[in-house]
Image 1: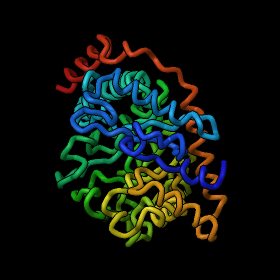
Image 2: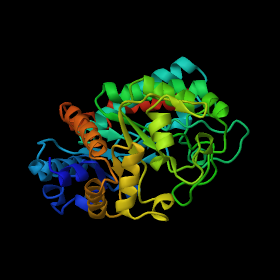
Image 3: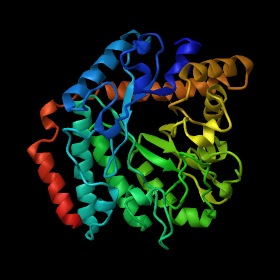
Length: 373
């Protein structure tokens, strides 16, 4: 891989950037994220399973010239409930808040794992290899406002219960062959502000964080999550009062990857780290695509999601290595981690389209909805 190839390989770009353009035959991006306004997936007219499968097939064909010979990761946000990209013709499984409301903890975990397994089969059938789920955040116990909670994206306010369901979801997705990208480290569910439009603060002590967000985060890591997405949030407890977690070496390097910082327990995570979208306000308000990419990699991120200008992001990475602002060994480590995950994902066989919205999957969804009341 050339330096340019390494730079593009750590970028995951939007489907609209590459679908139908042949861009992947020239710029060898490490991943593509599919969006779906009202269920109409990028590159489709209706977002049906057959149309989505055709889009992902074309993406892999466009990427055939990649020097690694490995297709890109293809991801989407398939949390279910309020956040379900693959919708038209796919099974509508219950979302996190519904599963978290099941009184019987063992049943809740079992159903969560079964649903994640079935959901992964549907994603693989249409060529999606990464799911940006589950959300591991813990809701406030005092009923305070939560941007995550208002859309039902958390399993609840009990850290141990949330941890059990996060572990179940990670296990279900990954044993079926889909990469689980747990999000949003160090946790957004106890925050009222929306990090898409502002830079919020997680104003808790390390002791508080250790007793809440850290419990399900560690459970997901221990369950084998292959990817963790960081959020754009300030976490002053570890020392950063101006830098979002997604580009903070204290959060990514010491807290997520390492043994901890300032009394906050470390996760010791060894998988692929990735940013939340670099098109969100906390990043774009301060950095251009090139500077943001270098900052994220230096913080310890491996995969950079949705830079505003992918070409500028790649150029910034190349300049960073050439100038010494970004150690070449850091880029090599990130590119290697992403490539390893691409290789592993490419080896997973795809089930037939007949698994999508199958009778068995619809029965499972109905069973879970009944258990949730």
